[in-house]
Image 1 (cartoon, protein in one colour):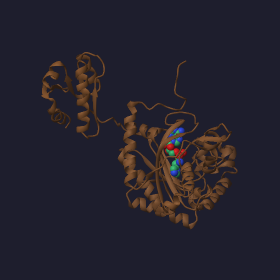
Image 2 (cartoon, rainbow, N blue to C red):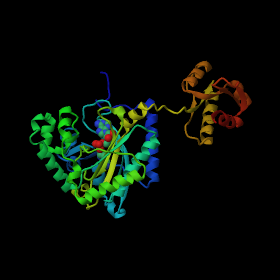
Image 3 (cartoon, protein in one colour):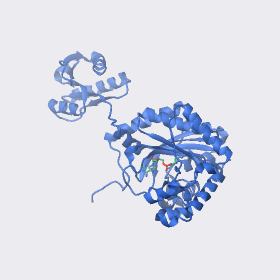
Image 4 (cartoon, rainbow, N blue to C red):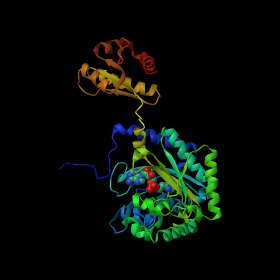
Length: 423
Ligand code: HAM
């Protein structure tokens, strides 16, 4: 039997892991320096967390969840997203008592049984943040400014922030009714999916990719006409202050989200490299979720970025790994190997510089083939230890660039040479 990874669940190989690590490290730094604390919830939750949280009629809940019974026939689901579990944990551990505003972040795998294609996986990773306990438009602004800053730290350029509002629950219901009225005599021209959306979640008709539906939607009522004064004022403040901060966004009236919990501000971050699946991240306000899941009546806003999609976008913009600093220790004989291990550790302890790797040879290969391995690992210098060197308490240093002749130095001077070679 030929073993393969499960459909839609991909291996992250070393050739891509470096970019992943860059993204994760930059995100953690940004979160921690903004006072966000990490939260880790389990991969499995009671299915009801998602049915209640995301919404019974959403695509995720009706067809994309990995759900199965446990040994006692309780229904469990592999989390398709992070927000509902975080709200479950926020309520379960009474985090409102710890602080009136919780600023949380998370990095972890999510699971959706979607049809796999470029940028659409069945296991994918999200980096996300949630601000729970605030109804202020400045929470939305903080979150969107954070995303904008993350893009800068990731050095991603061609992204867009698309912004819209859905209004509060009453506004959202009013808008849904207006939309239904508008579509009622056009439903025969809608695609099959949209005809069923008309019944279950009419707002989703607005983001249908079908050209016929897009034409119909062009004349649809504007969500802004359904907003109450409070929601209109909130949205104006978000837009005005983002502009004042120099953060570019596109107001996109047909932007609705596939999860039911959203109210008020919603947004997507898109990048052209992803084609149909162009959202590298998305989020918005969800002011009723905490209350709906049994907690206090507090507002919240957050987002999640898809790491795999981010990697596609960064590579599309030509991101390459920074050249590493590798030192290769080539040895002949067991005694030299032992000395090589000690020297390697000494260098690792002595140099607290990121991005340095010290490799020691562990095979029985000839010096020539060790030098070939050193070349493959793009080593800058090779420290060679043979019988002569051992006898004299020295090592031979070979510069792989070939520009400087190799030299023999006492073991005690290795660090000086290493620093010279790597600066
Ligand atoms: P979402 O739009 O469902 O929102 O997902 C957020 C991001 O996760 C997407 O923009 C995309 O980058 C990535 N993503 C989603 N599905 C897949 C997939 N099948 N394969 C690869 N990447 C994918 C949420 O999940 C919300 N919980 C975000 C949020 C947090 N809203 C408020 N707080």
